[in-house]
Length: 592
Image (cartoon, rainbow, N blue to C red; front, top):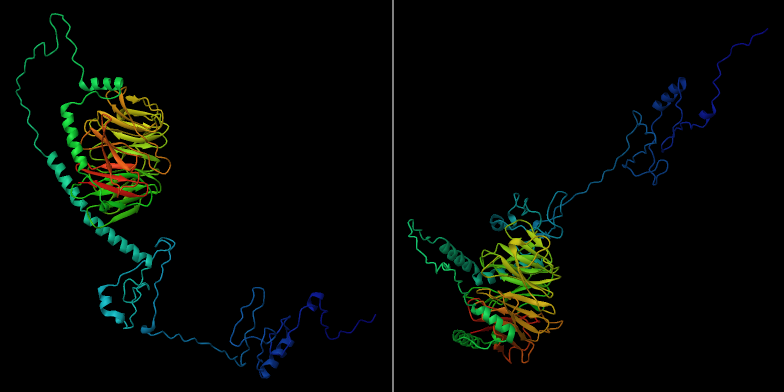
């Protein structure tokens, strides 16, 4: 059997997968497609051809096709593509074009620097919308435009906010107006000289506190007291009862008859002096000023005798300060967001003005125009429990009362007590016994002991019955606190003897102020307790002064200057001055 002769070896038949791979094409200016590289003798021949053949320059073409592209621009390959082969050794390098940008700085004289705004960083910085303005140092102002280290006028520490040589260029119109208002307010408060009044009060308090106390006698002689003085009857005969007090007799006579049958001679002389003082108080055109924008809801007068400083609170939350003796005018501050129903100057520091609205109790330092929040509940009125004005009793519109201590940090009250009222309009502390306070609500007027207050179920010490409609106000008499005057919507004024709340004097008075006027409040004259002041609906418009007997003593009126109802009134504690406020925000000052 003949065997086949061996011949030259045949190349293996390519597989279907190898047929699909593209072969390497030589020549052309584009990027060669890659296939399987030849191996063995074929690879050696290919290398020899490439070394002996001169390299052809690649033509430049626009676009992204084969051989195209921008000269000198390297296009990054995608992650799935094969990297290009480096050019073979000995071939000419491709020309690379470079683009140079020359930045020429502008001269210093042509720069126009605008105020820049700092953006808040991630860890702090200025608040959005606010600018930080840096004043130029004296060295920079002296050197001027050539203060930089290279003489170019650029300051390395500057952030661009120093625009020009004028320091006000970097401030907006709002900021310039704000600085102007601050300067005017500082001048106004400096002219009031309230700081001197405070120092005088502190010096007076220290002089009273530091006075020498009397020494007690060590060996006191024991005095003998007779059995008569000790009210002891050795024979068994009962001692007769002491006669009734005059005030109790007068109270009984008020309850039976409804008015006094006679006036004592001493009281008559006092009434004559009071009427003479009231007749000397007049109203002029210079004593009328619009202080707040809306209707007046509360008034406070400064206790100083050298100036007449009046504070008024309106329905919109504004507080207006007016010095009627000076030419500075008035200053208005928006201290609250609601109606300011009560205001008082601190008896310990006259520079502090405390005000109450439906949202909070705030203390204002009128010398610095700073308002600090003391309590943040819905409040209607307040009064101080001690002479240093550190604690106060506060009435709430929901009917509760709270005890507030200004020395305690925070705005929470020390105690909140439910006294059973639907609504508490006014609270007033007894002028002698500070532990008692008077609360007036819807139809209730009661006296409570602050030492016995609890969170729930508080019983009054005494209560006044007989009001058929809502009570607008109730206040103790200023000297002894033996009387209480109330204003009720049933068109009556009640002068009550506080020791016997069952007996009171009725005085008919029109109290229907309506919707657009503040409700009347009857206030006592702080200098004596035999007369009180209340607004009037009578025409011509007037402010009425009543005696504690119910008799009308005087009416303040002026046909030329007073043409509106003054619902809220106040009397100066040491001078013959009366201030009334109407529903348009005006104050009327009656003075000697």
